[in-house]
Length: 188
Image (cartoon, rainbow, N blue to C red; front, side):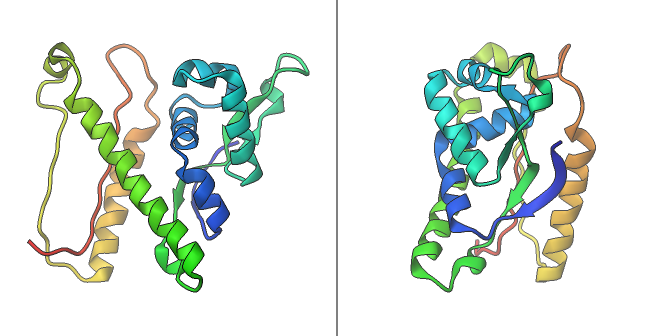
């Protein structure tokens, strides 16, 4: 069963596996739709079943996914689920080795690209879709004066708000919505 705790990734091999665009997308689909088969995931991503199966095995070998045999209707059917809903990592955990530091930095960059791609897809959505959502789709930014401890508190509070909304069932007028936030030191 998928755990709600945040898994701290400290293995560069896991970060490298996670950073592949299709693997990341497969994990996103599993996060939103729950356990699934390679066939269903292939349909959801527009990929070949064999390709999806390969990437599921890679994610499974890294401990990011696990099989869910209790969901199978027969011995041939293989279901997969996330081990945990949330992952985090810090480039600080990889500073001792230049090769793993490069993997961690690339993973962070690819993660930001993934987040930005989600927003850009919304910008490219048809006008009818944008009109349906009106002003509810949002962007916000603030310049704050915080200590590291205060920034951690802001992070915790934002996560608490998002967690309260996370498990609402799909259906009716409710659609999957991607929300992300970054809080980083910066200069105006």
